[in-house]
Amino acid sequence: MLKALCIMERTAVADIVNKEGSEVELSGWVHARRDHGKLVFIDLRDRSGLVQVVFGPDAAGAGDLRLEYVVRVKGIVQKRPPKLVNEKMPTGHFEVSAKELAILNPAEPLPFPVDEPGYDINEETRLSYRYLDLRRERLARNLALRHRIVKQIRDFLDHRGFLEVETPDLTKSTPEGARDFLVPSRIKQGSFYALPQSPQQYKQLLMVAGVEKYFQIARCFRDEDTRGDRQPEFTQLDLEMSFVEQEDVMRLNEELLIELVRTIVPRKKIQEIPFPRLTYREAMERYGTDRPDIRRDPNDPDLLAFCWVVDFPFFEKTDEGGWTFTHNPFSAPKPEFMDDLLHQRSIPDILTTQYDVVLNGFEIGGGSIRNHRAAALEAVFGVMGFAKDRIRENFGHMLKALDSGAPPHGGIAWGLDRFVMLMAGEPNIREVIAFPKSGDGSDPMMGSPSPVDKAQIDELGLELKQRNAKK
Image 1 (cartoon, rainbow, N blue to C red):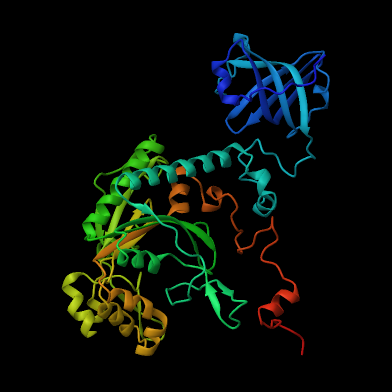
Image 2: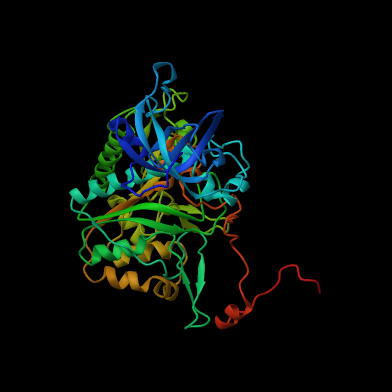
């Protein structure tokens, strides 16, 4: 009969391969159960992997075990008989003969199995029970991959003298392309914070501050329609450098991407090093897109075809007939077009220092050399038709900063979720985010967005209008 369990140091499942003949204590979830009469077999799962545990005829409580019960088991690690080896499991040459068992927490029947990839399960259901969905091996592996990529990025940049600096999530609403998420102020009623679409202005202000080499694994927010590779909140690798030119930023990022692939996903092959470069015009003429998929064999899932796209037009026409920026209003024009920008002439011909890095048809990063002089930034907004008082109201803080001795600087931002998605071979970024939003931007697990108490609305000095209210 199994004895009451005495606490000892826990062993990770993956480590049993080094503990043949030793007594171990394992804790985890019942991943599978097989009742063979006198013997009960379970596959025990923890974060490190799976192992078969065998309960003999005296194993009191083993018959009560069900899928996803949380248990603690003490037993002896032993070799499996040769005919019963499971080559599909890293621990498949071993099993644990149980001596003691404790059920730490039973589990109700799950709404879906977690021992399968899960692609065929309705996404709304998966997201409603995301804490269960994350138990499946595929998603656990994706989270681990994401962790390793972020750690490698941090180590790479730290080694090269970069500082990781956090910037605010409550900031000012400024016109930067997408729609802002707004946060009402209780103290200053009628005024609003905005959640950052990116740390663009803050990272440039850090360059003015003399940080010189900055990066951040930054949370960003854009109130726009979702799709497979886009979410209302997402993560960027954000990076900025002082006293650099376009080549410096592109070279550093290319080195980082190559190191990430070779270190984290060595099974994947980069098609061409150094990465090919295409001008915007070449990309559009040859591929019909500025995010070209240049793979020689698109059927090879482990082939990575990086390329750079450069020489973008700075401005494009709006539907109303005016001008707007194509990428980023803080970008500098190529040096030979600076005079045209300052005098606001030959606008369609002005090319920017923007550079995008593309992978297998996905834009995974974009950046530029910035305008580090106030007059040039002011000219950009002038081209877009902003009156001087509006420029000063929205961007006066940037103009003051640039007038206080701003160094030449440039940087880039990667869509980290999108990059991890491609490294993991997943169809969309929701598969590599722990708690993503659904296609309509909601969280069915938490029930957000949701109404709030009227008292909270009143405290903010707001009044809600009901849409489609009956007259």
